[in-house]
Structures are given as C-alpha cells and as structure tokens.
Image 1 (cartoon, rainbow, N blue to C red):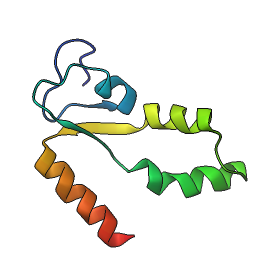
Image 2: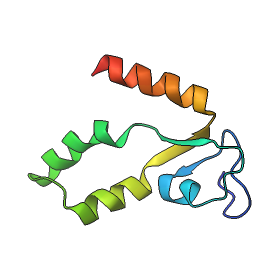
Image 3: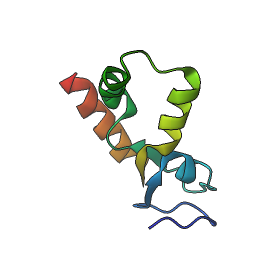
Amino acid sequence: MVTTSGPLTKGEVGTFGELSARPNPLGLVVLQVPALEDLLPFLEAKLGRKLTDAELAEHNDRAPSMAVEAEVANHMQAFRRARR
C-alpha cells in the first residue's frame, strides 16, 4: 500500500510517479516492475506507432514500481540487461 506522505520505505509499491515524488532519505531506488522499456514494444504495437513524449511520460509515471535498496536494484537491472 502506498502512503502518499512521509518518507519512502523499503518494499513500498505504487506507481513510479507516486513513489519517486516522496522524500527518500534512505536513498532507495524506485524500480519499475516490469521495466517500461520491456513494455514499449507492446504499447507501440497496440497503437501502431511510436509513443509521443507526452505518452511516454504518462506511461512512465503510471508504471507499477517498488522501492528497493540500491544493491537489489543493481542486481535486478543486471538481470534485465543479461536477458535482452
């Protein structure tokens, strides 16, 4: 559940826009799950065109995300890079 005020805590989930707007004194990483770049081909195929900058920003802000420690984010991003 997302708390709309107060500092971000490890394990919180919500949209990228909501989580990334919160104070982050622990230096957590807001990680999109799944990564937006993995969804782009499907979004663009559905529309039959590339997304506009405004559409891309909207999808980025609404992307399901979670707050994790930097080490966890680094491992997840390395895994994502390896499978592409």
